[in-house]
Image 1 (cartoon, helix red, strand yellow):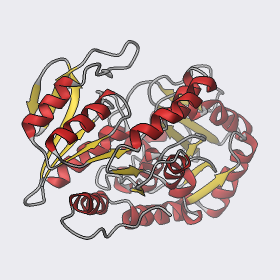
Image 2 (tube, one colour):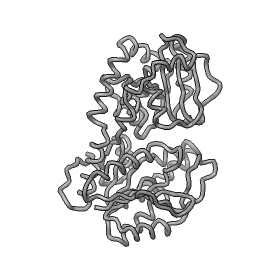
Image 3 (cartoon, one colour):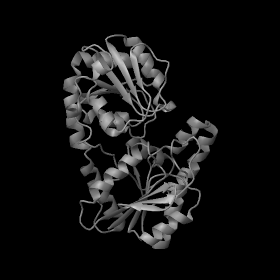
Image 4 (cartoon, helix red, strand yellow):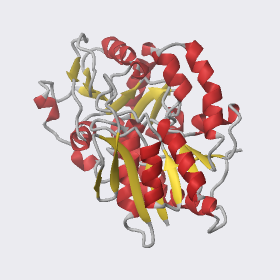
Length: 371
C-alpha cells in the first residue's frame, strides 16, 4: 500500500499538522508492505526520505508558510508517484489537486479536516465571509471518499454542513519526547522564582483564538505564589508581575522540558479543533485547566484536570485553586496514564490504516462511523 499525504500546513515553525505527518511517517516505515510519501510546499523541487517538496510562493507575513497557487505541479507529482491512496490535510489548492489526481489515477482520496476554515476566516476577516465559506467546505469535503476529523466537535460541524461519510480520528502525542522524566528541578531557579512557586504554563502561538488575555487575567487574580510561564511566538509583552514570557518558537524537546517542569497547563482557547498542547502536557505528567469549549472537553477528563467556563478568568482561577487543593501531582500521574491508553501514536496509526483499508476495500471497515 502506497499512501501519499499532502498539505500546505508545513513550515519550519508549524504545529499540529506537521507533527501528525512526521509521527505518522516514522511509524509507517515500521509496517512491511507500506510506503508513505509526503508532499509539501518548498522553494523548489526536492526529495528527502519520502518527503517531496513542490515549488510554492512564500505567504506574506505567514511565518514561513507557502501557499500553492497551481494544481498542476502537485497533480503531476502524484501521477508520477502513483499512490494507492491520497490524504489531503488542508482545504486549499492542494485539496483540489488531490481530487484531480485521484480521478485520473482512479484511487480514493481522504480529506482530513484539521482546521475549521469558516471559523478561522471569521476570526481574521469577518463573519460575513466566514459564513459564505460554509458552502465551499460542504462542496469540497463532500467530494472526498472519506472525511476524517480530529474531534467530535469538528465532525459535528461537517455533518451540519451536509458532509457525509465523516469519521472521528483523534490525533496522538509523542510519549517519548513528552514525558515526566523531562522534568528539570532547577527551572524555577532559572526563572528567578522561589522553590515553592506554583508554576502554570501555556505553550503555543500567541494568536487571538488562544485568548491569552484570559490567562493574564487569571494570573493577575491568583497572584503569588502562582506564576504563569508563556512559551511561544507572538506572545504579549505587557504582562503582570507574576508572568514570565519566552517569546520565540521553541523546539519540541525544550517545550517538553518546560511542560514537565511545571505544575499545570492553562488553556483558554475556546475554538480548538483538537488541542495538541493539552495532550503534550498530560503526557508530560501535568494536569490541564482548560476552557469547556471546542475539542478540549474531549481531551481532558475529570481525573486529568479541570474544565471551566470559557472566557472567564475568575472561573479559571477558581479551577486552578481547586486543582492545587487536590494535588497536581496525582492528577498529573492520571493524565499520563490516560494519554498512554488513548493517544499513543501507534494506536492512532493503526486506526488510520483501518480507514485506509476500508476505502481501498481490502478489509471490512472496523472503524465506527459518526452517528
